[in-house]
Length: 270
Image (cartoon, rainbow, N blue to C red; front, side):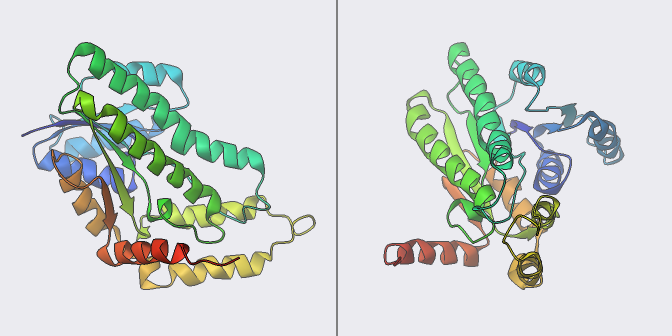
């Protein structure tokens, strides 16, 4: 059955690819982008693809309360909280204002939108069958060094989603997370550049060359440059579905690694 799906963060990456794929499968998409300059290029692409009748493109800057007010008035069956950003670098030296900003964008603002939307559904009596999806991360389930700020936001998102699933079940609202591995979209690569704008060898102790090498070595591995098409194809199926798993980790080898990591965490020694 065709669904209407609001997606945040549709200008590129997973949200962009999945918006087009779900529209081609017959769903109605409200593809939102962060800044106004991204609206027209996406509208033009949608028209070129012949999907103008299935994809509405609009700006939704979660830091703008008026944008949120407008988004709450739209009608849709599924809210997909996909937009996000990431700060990498050593947690013990990262400026706290950057940590706060990362939590604001990845946790607090999506929660603001989600609270408004689910309350609207409940007040209207239309909640049953609705769904909220969160783009989390493999990093929501484990914590590698120098990624702690970003993945801590995803850990928080995992807890929020799990609580929402229990709290909203009686209203018939479904909750899911999608947990991608390190697919090559440019998102992780840009995040890895971020700490070098604030790390200062005159006052920080982190070895910049070693940090850069660690990032580069990871992105040079197959696990650090996986084809995003696999994840997008999974999202195209998972997001509109009425049934499925609460947590959706891709690829399977990453799911297996995360399960093993969580088992080993019980035996971790200081």
